[in-house]
Image 1: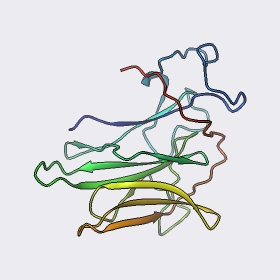
Image 2: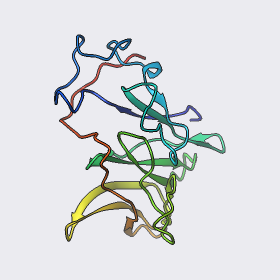
Image 3: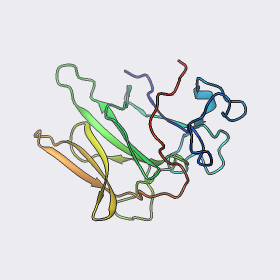
Image 4: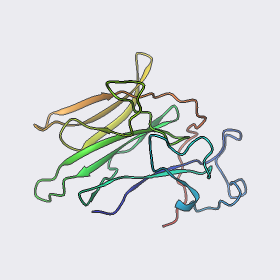
Length: 189
């Protein structure tokens, strides 16, 4: 399909109250259900939405369309320490021999800015990591190993062998966003 898929990061509550929004505590001009127009468009993961976005309700990122096929999220995203990581898989379009490739995104929940860094220069941010193994991404996780957070991505190599890659990223952020818990958020079509 060439229909654009999107990733949504909705800020539901404030760090000052420590509670989810209710209809009476929503920011001025915002109502339930949350709509795309109440969120910031995140068009560049290298800059994100900034520290003073026009909307405090969150942001969305439209996944790319390549050669008429839209990238899609088929693996559960993961979050830790104010960072969310997700995989965008690009199917190859073949019905007879399905496969594809995948990209990894890891961004600050508060600012929408990428936390992925170049493997050759840890001071250089990159918008996404294109996976070197052949095939779609099947797993993504942020894990603490030896006291340090790491981003792991899994998939299959061209011969079908499971492959796990540790991607370089700055996985701690002091941006103020934190996970309280999960809940279903009313959305509008």
